[in-house]
Image 1 (cartoon, rainbow, N blue to C red):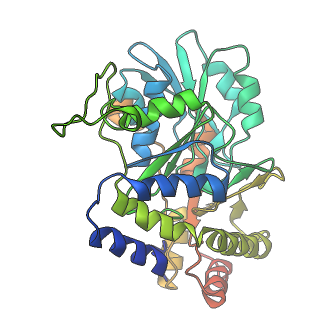
Image 2 (cartoon, helix red, strand yellow):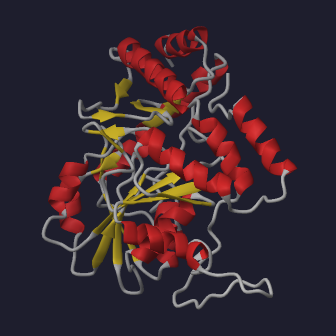
Length: 365
């Protein structure tokens, strides 16, 4: 039994071979079609494909105008990329506490972290569980702040019936190897404002507007760059893999939610286990299934002895020297970080596998 399931559909392999057999492998028609299908199938608004979820986060911050001297509020319970990109802009990540019952940003603590230097807020949908965006927006009311959702683990999730990727000014997705769909590595930046999307298209390729520049008779592209750009575009080979995998996403999400439902029903009274709160307004994507347990190391050892993988997927990142060292004013984060554990939750699991996981936990540790 594997903790993650890295899957590439037959369609993705076919499309990849078509690209490899053609005369163009860089960003082109396949990447454009992938963007169209992300919008058509998932309701994502103006998705701009890039070569990583980290690139999507950085691009969003740049377009939002985040720079030296600014502050960006992020949860400490995330992967280092969320705060790293803030520092790449010359800004300071300010860590906010989380609700340990959800793993997501605590809107009450958020209010206390906003200052005159705050320029943006990055809510992270931890493990595919959806943040309470209404509370976050309410906490940020009256301030001119950009909301940049880190949805690296939440492709296909919804909030109050709305697709994640259709709500905030910016939403960032990842198509890294273990995500819901993979392009090998890649990502997408969704932009509610079409002007932001056009700027993202320019900046993802050195600040050059490839769609509206001419090619001179001598063969060179004619352009005049007036803003800093990056080499963040997604090539057609990667896009072909993602496009083919996208066709199976709905069924894969259905299976993940089915497995999560079994876990919730059969583990709700298991001694030593505390399930995360599932609010009625969300439909999670279940990148991982996280819960809180007592005596975590004993739990992990017991499950491994029964051939069931269990893992702490991400630790609090404020403990890193780069970010200033561990804080003592994040009690929700501290509790979550000490008790969180994740178990397999993916479409590669059989019904027997799921029962094996449940049985291993109920057997105790």
